[in-house]
Length: 199
Length: 206
Image (tube, rainbow over all chains, first blue to last red):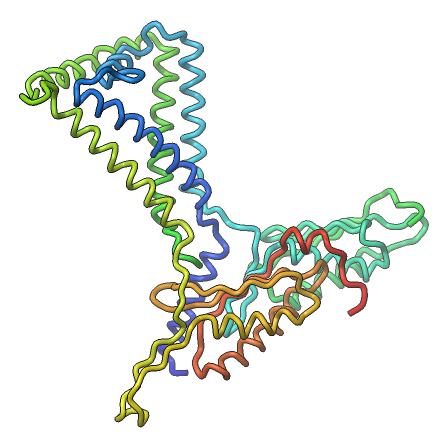
C-alpha cells in the first residue's frame, strides 16, 4: 500500500469512527418530519379549499390568521400559557437534538487496519468478569458502570471474607490497559460496607 | 456508517426546534403580559390587513378566489414532500458491488472486467464468525461510504467476553480476507450487546 492511499484509509476510518460514536438523530428527525408533514398537509388542504372557494373543513386560512392576530383574544390565559410552554418544550427538545453532540455510549479501540467501536455495555461485562475473578465473588456481587472517562466497579464482599481493593483495582486497570480504549477511562473500585450472606 | 444525512438532520431539527420554541415562548408571553398582547394585536392586525388587501386584489376570474391561497397550498405541498423525502433518506446507502475493475490488454494482459459482489466478503466473514461460540449474533453489511464500499461487521459477544480479544481475532480474519480478495476494503467492527447476549448465560468454560 502506498502512502497517499494509506492516508486516505486513515481519513476514512476517522470519519467512520466519528459517525459510529455519535448519534445520527434519525429518530428525532423522523418524528419531527412526521409532525411537520402532517401539519403541512392539513394547511395545504385548508388553503386548497380556500383557493377553490369551497366550504372549509375546520377553519379557513383567513380565520386562522385572524385568530393568531387577535391573540390572546378570548382564549383562557392559563390554557394559552400552558400550550405555549408545551410548544416551547417540544421546540427545546428538537433544538437540543440538533445542537448537542449526542455521543453514544461507545469506545474506540485503535487498530491500524480495522475501525473498531465497542459498546460500553460489553466493556462493562468484560470488566465485571475480571473483577469477579480477582475478588473471588459471584456474578451478582459485582456491578460495573462504564462512562466515557470513568469505570466504576462496585463489589459487595461476602460476609467474613476480606477483599483487597487495590488487588481488584490492579486487575481491572490491567484489563482496561489491555483493551487499548480511546478515550482512556480511569478506574475506581468501591467495596460496599455491608457484605452478603449465603452465596 | 450508512448514508443518513446527519448534517441535514441536525440543521432541520434545529430550525424546527427554534421555530417551535419561539412560537411557544411568544404564546406564553402573550398570555401573561397585556402590554405585549396590545403590541402584538396592533402589529399583527396591520400585517393581516395588508395580506387581505393583496388577497382582494388578486382574485382570479375563474374561481373568484385569490391565487395566493393556491400558492400557499403549493408551498405546503412542497414542505410535505421535502419532509417525506427527508424520512426516506434515513439509513440509506447499502452497497451491492464490492469491486468493479476494468482490465485492459496493455496493463495486465487481458481485456475484460472483474466484478465482485459484496456478498463475497459478507459471506466469507459471516461464515467464519458463525463458528465461534462466544458470539451470539453476527451481521455483516456493506455500505457505500464516501464513494467507497465499506463493510460493517456487527458482533454481539456473550457476557464477559473481552472485546479486545474478539477485536484482535476478527482483525486477523480481515487480514485473511484482504489476502483472499487481493485488495483492502475499509472495515468497521462494531462490538455490541443485544437483548440475546444480555439474557444468555456467560460461558462457563473457555
